Amino acid sequence: MHEKKFLKTLQNMSLKKIFRRSIRILLPLALGFGLLWYLYKDQDFADMMAVIRKGVRYDIILLSLIFGMLANLVRGYRWGLLIDSLGERVKRANVVLSVYGNYAINMALPRVGEIWRCSVVSKYSRISFSKLLGTMLVDRVMDTIVVAILTLSLFIFNISFFKQYFSANPAVLEGIYSMFTSVWMYVGLVAVGIVIWLLLTRWGHISVVQKGKGVILNVWEGIKSLWKMKHKVRFFFQTILIWGGYFCYFYLTFYAFDFTRDLGPRIGLIAFAMSSLGVAVPVQGGIGVWHFMVISTLICFGVKESDASSFALIVYTIQTMWVVLLGLFGIFALPIINKENPTDALSAEHLMESTTEDQDETK
Image (cartoon, rainbow, N blue to C red; front, side, top):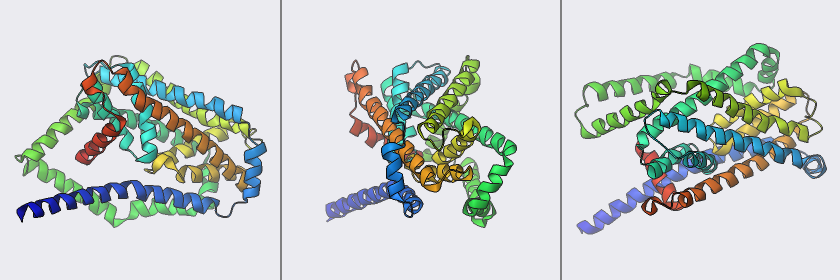
């Protein structure tokens, strides 16, 4: 009798975990595809097919892919600098390949790629996962700062564009306004503050809380790696290279279409900044959101809606396929180059399973 109850409890726990993970994957994917359907449901597909067949220089788009690959190569080396500052040594091939794999996994599981990246490098390099997580947070914070500076600068010097953009897309401005005026947002912040206070003052003796503090301290140690770093100038130079590479990755595609070829780098930079904001949304690969940001921006600069939609569809599809191919190469190359440690050579499937468990623990 007790055995049956135990098995039933295990089954329920398993079903809950499967349901929770399914929602985490399917909900953002449904939102992304829903937005994609909304954007393309009224498009003239005959015009779009004409562009796809005869209106694109695919050689230029293929050339742009090199810049995306190089930008993520530099990102791997930059992350290696952060890890070195912890007093640890890591193979550069491991960090570069893990960065490639990171982006491919995010195409299926939003934000899981970052956890997987830390998990796989921790496994092969025997470095604390939580410390690596701290360095990865620094990596992401730098991205946020760059996008914020870029967007703010463009906003200051292109106010007329943003006025036109929000006038054409009032739902975006309304969404931002409602988020900051929502009572529930502030209630949530207060609740989080109270829980943190209780954890620090009343519940600090509980073993789970103590373990959590240990993880947070390791993460903080990773975050402090930026201040400890010996090669700060190299770090910031690599940051410029990364984002310069991303810009070329996007902007070069303008020259593949007659209707975007003459828009110029200023408009290219605005469209790039808007697309970067789209990718920041926790949806698989920014699907739907990226298309919306790029299409709406190009329309503001006089590009016909069907042409803008064709541009977004073609560029996103080809570049996404490239990201996935590079990522799969990184995922399957990692066990091969680490064969000298056979006990550490996990299969891609096993790594994905352990990564998801790590994410559950961090949440």
